[in-house]
Length: 329
Image (cartoon, rainbow, N blue to C red; front, side, top):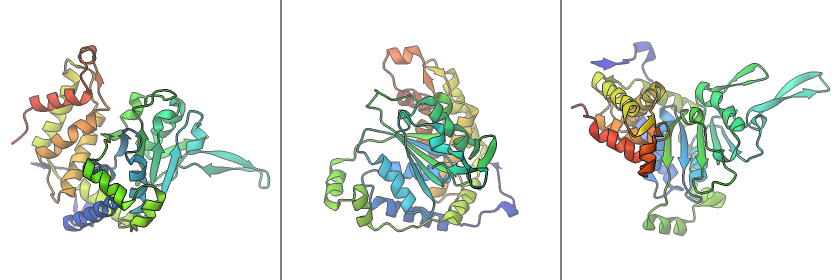
């Protein structure tokens, strides 16, 4: 039995074939600049169409910032960037009300959060007070400044980056903020052939991006139609039970101190719908759940002392949970 079947009034305006063509056009344009990171590009597209924010973690020089900039250029959406630093204040992100002496009134000077795609670069360099300024924006897609709520729009999407190597002058993201990210994606170096191609084409940096000749292939209306199509993807009861059982298993596993929440299960379900649509299907498979479970949960669980003593990682613990859980047939 299928769930969440759309009513005729809610039926998506975009067909699956049109959606696949849009996704392929996005991939092709992004690959003009980002090479050797196809899996990362795919996960980012899942995030975009699942309405989920994305946290990229990796060493410097692995095109994390460049990926966000490239995505903004292949769409017709507004782009904003915040370079997080230890002295960054919440008002620098959200904006402030300034007094206009000519009119005798306060006027809102909007911060970079008022955009469609926001790049939060090196987010772990900002203190917790500034990091938390993004909480309401990421969860509710609106911000409150001096008691007044301002909507950001349904297209608001955050790509945050952090560097796991440098620890001096950094502030680990609080669990409440981590839970707002759909995925935590680990960015690694490309393989040897891809690095040679990058050097040969010279597509790194602003000059390289200009040289690549990127063309916008998605506007706001296409994104909304894509969202509607993903929302219409049906999840069979067996898939829903599989998602719930996996998430609940993180709460009872002996190596996990704190497991994933119901919000995590809902986020994973949305990502599964998006992956199915990107693959040209109007239904989900267990493979969709299995491929997304670890990146959707690795930042949402807290390992217990036993796992830490044994040097186990979140990915290893989650993979073990995935292997123990029977998939639906």
